[in-house]
Amino acid sequence: MKRAILILAVAAFFGAAGCGRCDRETLTVNWTFRDSSGQPISCDASGTSTIRVFLDGVAAVDRFNRIDFTCAESPNGIQLFDVPVGVNTVEVDTFDASGGLIIQNQQTVQVQSCGDTSVVLDLSALRGNIDIDFQFPDIGFTCSNQDTLMWYELLDWNNQVVDIVGPNNTPGALPCVAGPILLSQLPFGRYTVSRIQEVDGVGFASHHATCTPQSFEHLAADETVTVIVPFSTGTCF
Image (cartoon, rainbow, N blue to C red; front, side, top):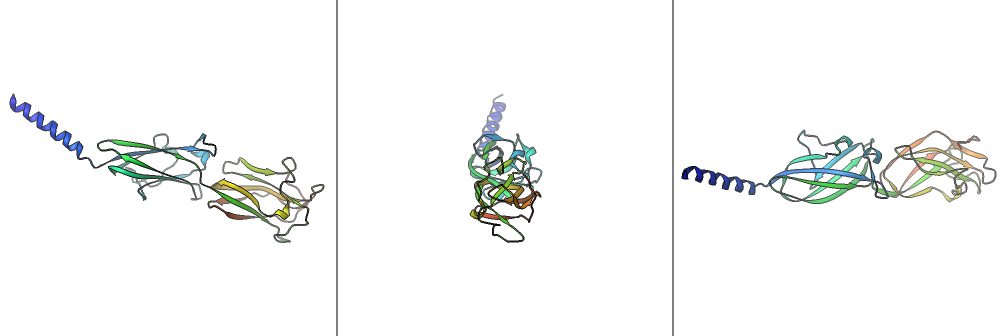
């Protein structure tokens, strides 16, 4: 009977010691998306198509050897195996449907031994200023006269109106001679100028107009995109 008790005691001791020697464990990474005001939004609403997780700067893979993840991973997140115990830096990057980086966040986490550690990162879109310039094929970047105005509508990746200037929305807000339309700290992503035209300052007669949507990727700060506005006496508003 004493021998049996001794064997059990030794087994218990080595079991505990074995746990104490754990030096690589699992890490479950999850995320939440937030809009510009800090309110939660869905992964789809953020414009995210693909998600990648980096551990100390190295792209992480899950047990299925996947490097790219989708919105379908929520709310369970992804579990990484063979993670070193101690302080690790976790980074989550998300990309839109065109592969452009739109969201990025990092967080340090203390990975515990002998078990799973979980971490949740708040994700908000990267932002930067952008100028939307306009070119008239017949006269270039000059305006028809000193008094014309620009009307336009800008949509985001969810076809939601981001900005609009027109007959019912501050029609005189964008003098043509003022040059490109500046949008400050616009979240990165895909946008569409759904319609744009140059109109006379008095009476709003059209000089140039197009109702054909023109899309572009906004993926860097202080960039300029140019939309084409052909000659037209028609109206898109």
